[in-house]
Image 1 (cartoon, rainbow, N blue to C red):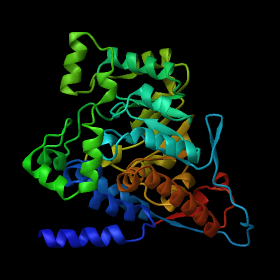
Image 2: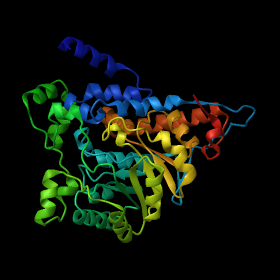
Image 3: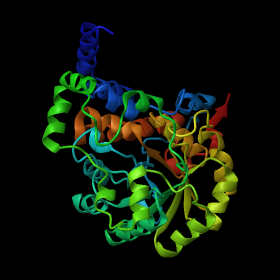
Image 4: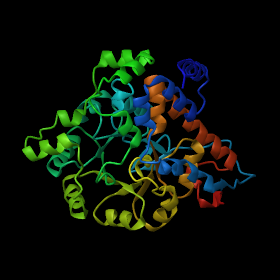
Length: 388
């Protein structure tokens, strides 16, 4: 695309009123260098799983009630003995420091203000301890098992730092084949290639923030007490522990005294086995289409899992509208986890952008309830949906 055309797109995007998540996505695209936006926005291989995660919501249409008092509506939910102001959380996402300086703490602060859970990724650019000190809200920690010795260390660090819920992600036995990142040679630390330097010059606001804050790093690995040669080798290769199994899950359950969730599941039997091993719930997920291309959307098995499993059922992958969230609640989800949606807000406007996206989605859920003829999300059920 010619430079003049690219600049015209940026001017239109930067001047438009931001009224939904897609607007924030376009703003993020105009704000970030291509290599960074592609990391945020991309999926695995042909990105068919990414596309399915959005297309799947069209399988259901709403069937509203009428002659119902909807003058007062309640979008709050209760989960793990706590009342939250909305039925969604900020999902764990990695390398957020490439979008905005101190991004992980900004996401945590926005979640605390909104009274929703915040989940910190193992691959964060701020350490477990630094994020814990950054705000007073409740924080959950997501664990990638790179090496089991290192995993135990991180679990103990999260426990000591006051995290209340541990999330173990299961769907990264090997890294997904993310072709956008491969073509762009995306890695940390960022390599200052001629193309990146040129692209950065076209995005001066991002470049200035980046220069002031310095190169983002995988802070939880840098500060880890992983001293053995075996652990250091695993860290250097960034390879996950592909041997993690039911017995591995049981060992972590034994040392974690609080709520434990298992993430990266789409099958009922895997959810049931996780609960049998001591998990308190699951997060149905296909990793936002970033791991196995052509994977089914977790929405396609949500109702079956929710009806046949003891324990909490959360879900992520592809949520962009409050109506998407309401559909998941109708099918039995206890809470929805937002990944890219809040990151688009972060990339576009920092902490204010995250606040804005959270506010938009709260309003969208409330408006959807009113139009459904339902006064509370606690009253939602599959009876409000028709599958087409």
